[in-house]
Image 1: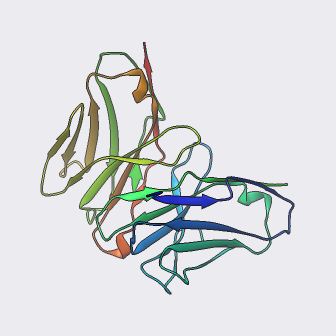
Image 2 (image 1 turned 135 degrees about the vertical axis):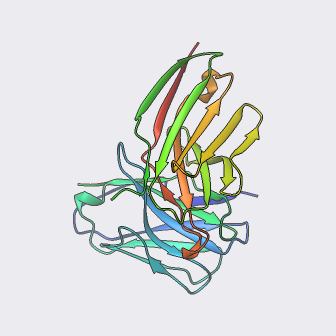
Length: 112
Length: 113
């Protein structure tokens, strides 16, 4: 039982490049979330999903897209990376409303 | 407008003493509150939670107090241990809105041996 895993752990991109971050969970949780964390700041919600095939925008969605084709996977895409997207990205899964979120270990992204 | 605030970016305490971490919120619709702990290079992990129908919840060395009228909650750790050194995030949700939580900016706790 791995919980929530994220791939890759670390990536360096050049401005304008694209990439996809993968989040996978084996807990059969309905809700999944993508956050970014910048130094000295809390977790800011990028996009989220309340079930397979559904996605919605969070607090800071610009420059990102997501897909949830399978319940266990939540993908975060950057179509054209910008230095402002340098951050640590965390994925989380949650069984239902007012439950605990289980976080992945994070992906550190550096955009040059 | 930040709906969940942790006004102390850092806190340093001596091993064995009490650590008190504070959190204030502005949204009166919040009715479920959580504390998460985060070590460097790891994801946050759940520590303790409290529903708005309670004013206290205890789990071992960790106790969370909720003061609804003041829109304030606090996390007490006693006795503090060096392994408690981490960043602590306060989070709040309102039971709707796709279960989303709003997080504070975190407080870095350092417990000195």
